[in-house]
Length: 399
Image (cartoon, rainbow, N blue to C red):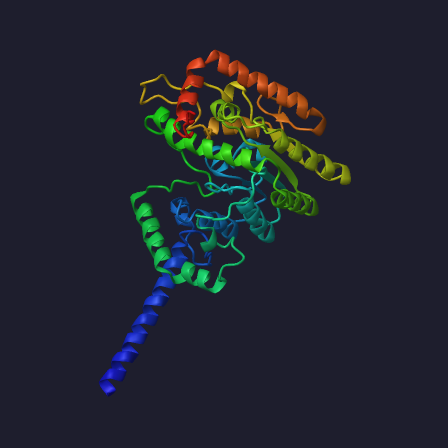
């Protein structure tokens, strides 16, 4: 009996020692930046990952572990395309908090988390086409529920996982391994994706994955047909919070390649130029600016059009190595285009236009004309679009 008790005591002490050692190791490495401690090693920052599995967790970790005067919010378009070290931020310490597949509901949660912990002077919020005119998703397949962003999660279990969990331990070992090899993580310490690669056989990937996704997006847009009141309330809260903090708020209506935009027209979407989205954003800014004329104005910049940067042709048929100039696919522009977007924060240019309620009709006509011009100059691309979309449409039954 005494031997059994000694064994139990030894086992419990060993278990406690392992937990303590794991706690010390995890908080020293702080792989997702969610457990900042005085002893956490700043030298490991370039090697800390922001991977897909723990994307929300790691981006929230940036907020926990840093001091940020400015932040950018949005989807993977922000994560990949917008450099937080761009000169437009004028010395402000800016974080890229873009989330993979992150739409407004999650961006609002990240914004709220950021505002509770920081004192911002500039906020850039990127809105994807169709986001505010489709309802919030019923199912979230990301790591949102495991991240600090979910207010309904069990905070004790979550913090225990961060400090002493096996998944955190694995991330810690991987981080140290990268540091030993001198291999930096895929993201910078400011949250910006480094050198997102062009895919092999871009045409095939677009005709399958990206146009099938576009097809589903169009069908959802047609089916819902109007603005989401829930999402508009989230936008209003973001505007109100920036007003309270006297922070400049810039909202980008993000670009997509012209073929993505033409897909909405090809599939018969009655609002194929996103007039409702544009008008809602412009009117939201106008109301806010009229209510507080002495505050920094809310700005809406629209980059979704047929500008030459958004309408380079597809690589030639049969070319498996070529790619669209400055586009990874139909959704994601490279930092070359992202730089042009950020240039417009304070400078002149031809890329993007600032939206106002009275200018919406003119803007829609301009976008229509640009897309018509692209279609006339690149009929082979339009034929490729139609053939690709036809694969996802149900065949019409003959009578």
